[in-house]
Image (cartoon, rainbow over the protein chains, first blue to last red):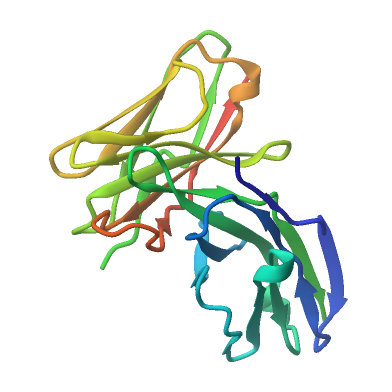
Length: 117
Length: 114
C-alpha cells in the first residue's frame, strides 16, 4: 500500500514570507518517484518537480526549493518570499510501478496556500 | 503546442443518467490518465490508456469505464450516475513510453449530479 500525507490543509501567509509545505509518504518499494504539482484556480495541475528515490540532493529553482529526506520519508517544499501568484493548492504525489509494469500516481490531499498582499 | 483539452468544462446531470467526458491529449502523447477530484477523497486515479489499451485501473466500480481512440483521444463514461459522482474529472497526458514521467493535465470537467 502506498500513502501520501499532507498534514497542512490550508496555510495563510502574507506576501514576502517564506512558507514550507510538508509531505510525508509511505511505500515498501526501494525505487519510487516523488512529485509536486500546483493547482491554480483554473483547475489544471501544473508540474513542479520530480525526484527519484536514489537522489536525495536538495533542489532549488528560483524561489522554490525542495528537501527530500529518505530517513524521515519526507519531501517538503519551500517557497521563499511568497507572492500572491503563489496562491494555489499544492499536491505532493508518489509514483510507483504497478503489477502491470507501468506506474501510477498517488496524490496527497493537497495544501491550499493563500498569500495575501 | 496545444495543451490537454477536456470537454465539456461543466456538466449537470441527474441521478441514474449516464455521462461521457472527452479528453484530447497533447499532440504526440499516447498515454491518457483519468483522475477524479473531490473535496473529501482528493485526487484518485481512475484508469490509464496507452495506444488504445487500458494499462492501469484504479479502485472504482464498473460504472466507470473508458476508452481510447487511434488518435489518442480518450473518453470516459459513467453510467447510472450517483450523487457521489459529483466531482472534477481531470485528464492527463504523457508520452507513455517511459515510467514515472511527468503528466500534463487539462483543466477538467466539473460534473454535478443532482
